[in-house]
Length: 132
Image (tube, rainbow, N blue to C red):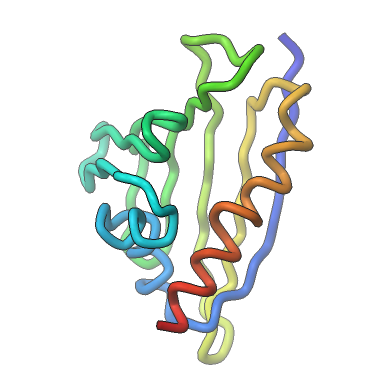
């Protein structure tokens, strides 16, 4: 299977720990996704979001600094046993946070949809939730 990757940089008007918590705290993650979320904060722990549309596990967790996870998307043409790797790196930029995001091992036919999906379902909703 051919795979591709995504690299995105997004700036949030919040400190790194607040952005980290939006992703890793089940209640905060549920608030911006509007879906039930299960989220482990342990290495090797599992997560589920969007009613099972995405699930995976934690490979590396450095609060406020870095998250590395395996993500599976319930998509046509995404093999059931295949996981992409998502890396979220948080950098302080003044009173804001610069998030460097990479996702690798994406089935190539899903790269375009996921590229826009991260903005639509994660970055913009997180920005809106942080304002509250």
